[in-house]
Length: 128
Image (tube, rainbow, N blue to C red; front, side, top):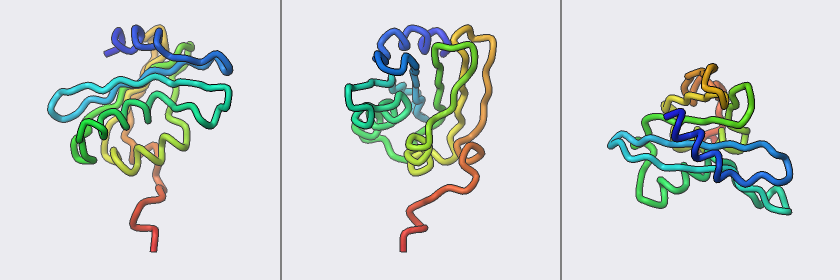
């Protein structure tokens, strides 16, 4: 998966922050969905790689129970974790899904679950 992420990073569009991120979501049926971060001149209107991949899967009809693994890589010497906006989306759709994050060189990785990344989530059941 590391090589796919490294190649996918070439499509990341980050002219403002120069923080390039790629994400691949693997579904239980083996289908892969790809995402990169895309910045615009109005930073809030861009999208992160994780949500880009997740929303592509949802567009294709995948549901919360369909997600098996999320792979993330950025173009630095350290690994990265999803931002808090992405964490909310991942809690809503992928709470028990594993995340593996890699650094660009592939010599560092860490695997956790979304549940471990977000131990005190805000969920739909909290809305009353």
